[in-house]
Amino acid sequence: MRRRATSCEGNTLVTCSEAGDEFAKPVPCAASQTCSADSVGAVCKAWVCQPSTTECEAGTDKRVRCAADGLSVAEATDCAASGQHCFNGECTDQLCEPHANFCDGKTPKKCDSTGQQATAITLCSDSQYCDAPSLSCKTQVCAPGTAVCDGNTATTCNADGFGYVGGTDCGASGEGCSAGACVSCPSPADALRIVEVHYGVPDYVMLKNTHSKCYAETAGIGLRVAYMVRTCSFGDCDEVRYAEQILPSRNIPPEGVIYVTEQPISSVDVTFSTALTWTGQQAGMVSLCKGACGATDG
View 1 (cartoon, rainbow, N blue to C red):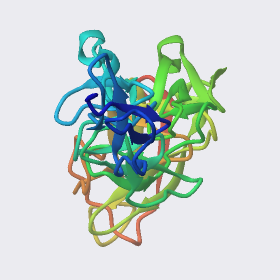
View 2 (cartoon, one colour):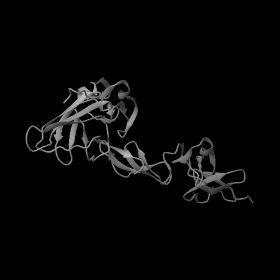
View 3 (cartoon, rainbow, N blue to C red):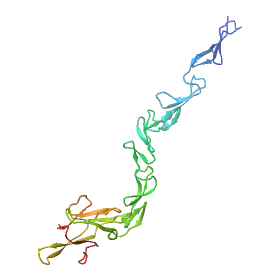
View 4 (cartoon, rainbow, N blue to C red):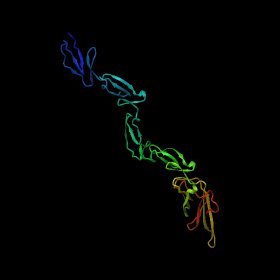
């Protein structure tokens, strides 16, 4: 008597009768099985992986390629060995820190658990940038990539529009910044003008930088106040009094103002070096000078 023999026909298990004169009814292998034959016979075996696919081994960074029959791994690659991660069957660089929030250009995003994908938290407008510390959209301070002035420094707006790249201090060469370039400036005495004089409480003189592009430095500029004081009730008893001083260093921006006053209200104001006794009925004169004012000034 012959032994019953088994073989594969496609993915179907076929069994020969003991007499060898006929086959039993073919038995298809179940789902996720492959018919496998060897010298002993044939049997339906369970897959160890999805046939002919490449995927990531669970819990590792190994990229595995499954054999066509699903019964073995044809190739395995350790992505971690090259500093990469396995994602969707490929060795790839990590896009972001898993679960972390970050700025992708001008868009705030949240990284997923794999570090390979991220979703937008919000969308910044064209005039905004993504602020990394707060992970929010903030208004640009300048147009990205353009030549601009940061105070009196000629510089370039950075790619995101929230700051500056490099720069030249125009003031170091006695110039002012205009449209991102250093331009020649007049002397402070030529740019500064007396625009208001106040008699009362407090007494003050308002000085304005009339230039539209250049800063004006007050150091060395002289200020002289001349005013009449009546010293008696009858006769010609008017007396001219003077108060004069050299102004300290103050950097006044284009079209900015500064006060020389008895009661400063900001850190840039200058205090009169001499107490004044102006009243609203008194005549007087205020002069600006290049250096100390002389006897004929005011």
